[in-house]
Image (tube, rainbow, N blue to C red; front, side):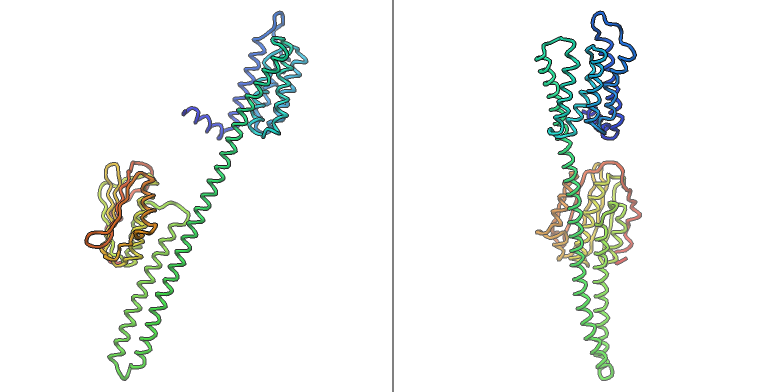
Length: 406
């Protein structure tokens, strides 16, 4: 099976080399047949005879470029050999190879001309030997041409199906990319609307309180100070909301096409989450080592999804990320202590958990998620890991720089 697979790959990667080898083999078979099978009393094959015999197979070196023209050339030269030398020989080997190429390249209605040319050539070149009756010779030629036609047609249909499958696969990838981009755009629009509502609400409060402070600034200084204090608090809240939403938008940038993220980018992700006001603690244990890109991408996406949803639904929750390199597997756990974080992984009816479970199952891993007994939510991923090409994460890059915003 490996030899067959290697041969197919070589034929696809280097078609001209394969055709040259096949044409050489067909030419050698033709020459061997011409020299070995001589009628009694006939002299040894001369230069002209051997040259004509070789020309019946050499054109097959370009059989892919012009299949029908190569077949006609092989048949004409074979008939010319028989007419000039008048000695039956294996001068139809090249024609058979060219006929198979025609059958595998054209639909039946176009290949029928090649079938007629091949059958006529076989009958004409073998008839002088008078080894069998004319009917048997024609029947044998029909069988040979038919078998080659069947194999060629099967190869043609397989190639058509493979091309169609490749087109459908490419179309599916384009549709998936378009869908992902559309979902990302819709999510960004939703976040932008959320930002607009938040800012509009806080600015309204600021406007009212600022107007009140201006009105009572001289008559009631205490009330004015209270109004200004409210303005300061509301402004701080608005800034925190804007910072959180902008971090979400930056996290969304990683969904765009490009180099797949890996665990080497966890420091950057952790920094963004902390800057949005989530107290995040990171702990790495075991010996960090290179992992296959798919494993790293899976682990990174689970971490990213979990942290992003915590940022959306429980931005003030104390969160911990535990990354453990264990023998033969990788363990990831993201948990928080917020009682309101029950939806931090997408909620029971959302798509977050389903998507993470499917991603984990794709690599033979398992993912569990659910509320913590004392409040909060935990997402745990266990996935097989083996050494391979991947990014290396250094523990010193991920150590906590404090639990506050960074």
